[in-house]
Image (tube, rainbow, N blue to C red; front, side, top):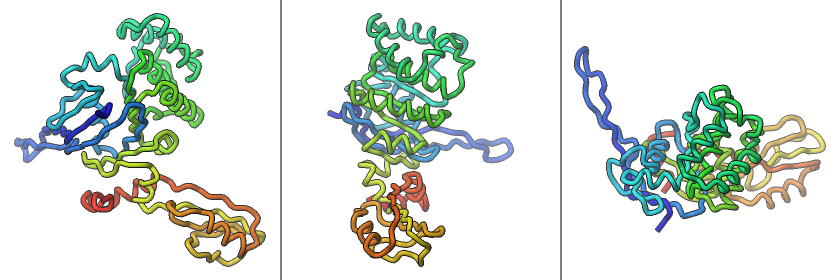
Length: 325
């Protein structure tokens, strides 16, 4: 069995809306609409989609915070809604917009409380804390009250807090929100090391698609509560008909380069940009340019996954689902 298993999972909310001056009507909203997938132990999977797609609702059902309206859900063989306390010992959660730390306490006191709450053996607690403090550079922040931390500092503190009890699975909902470029790189490297050395299963939800590109080989796309795509990141580029760019620096300014398999995009002086399918090899194109033009330098730029996702979200939901078949 997969470590995480969802079978036709549904979550419906009832909302009240104005239907006149004094009257309100009730309406059912399907936040998650029949999602099915499995995640094996040790996988690191990206779970992406636009705002309101159902990502956070799925995570909350996986942790037991919300109870499904239908379908079947198991994490490590446990029903999260029925055995939430038992499951809590085996999972770690980071919600980017909400903290698990105590607002008025120094960061180290929050960690001490978690030490007691999870009944972590002393030696293991010290080892995990020292490792997190070193890799996430938290040493200077341990005596600072959480309310005085910046958003980026608090996020690093939350990541460490989620890992003190050695969870088997880690749910990350916008874990790099508010982080600068250096801090994002540090957190990504930490997560990569965690997955590699300890085999921690990671389900990552984010709007920063660089997180997905650098950490996940598998990605799932959700929209309007339905799973639109589940596969390799390279396959997502193929589905979205994304393109790579060949940036060519010529010895002098010339008319647009014309070679088979590529289309001219633009030129700035002797520099020209050519687009070609992301699924195609760059080697024949490079050879054609090198043999036919006075070449100084060239480079290949990978496709922007954000543009691929945006293209998928264009049109109606049915059109998007049809494009992914």
